[in-house]
Image 1 (cartoon, rainbow, N blue to C red):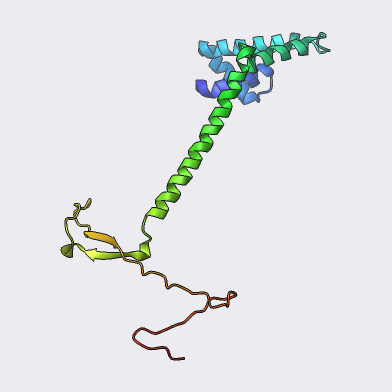
Image 2: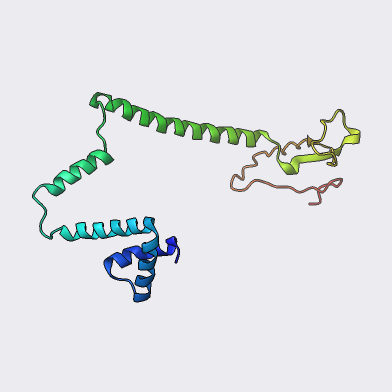
Length: 179
């Protein structure tokens, strides 16, 4: 057996919980390997020290002293109580800055969306009929210019006394009213 396999079995052997074939293999290996023999001695010493422990109640105040030390390590006290207001002010300022950043981002994106032309109102014009064009980023990409179509003015609706529904007339192009 190799050292890795024996090291897995040393704790069981030191506790007397190994099988006979494992016990024989560990004893044969420990007789020729000094590193594994030292590790076996450490296991035996640890088991002897654990056996010396006695059962019973802990002395009074033990848990309180332990918890005081653990709490001091986990939750150290602030260095100066005078600066506690400064810490709180920094936290509130950080929250305010995050809120302002979110508001500015929303405002900027809503203005950018309102200012940009909508895709259906844009017309695609070939480059050959247009003026100067920016060079394309890809060598084989088509060169296009987007121009906004003029939007027709909405027809003016006059109040005719019927305020519940507006009056709608449909006149086909190039025809007269047919009603």
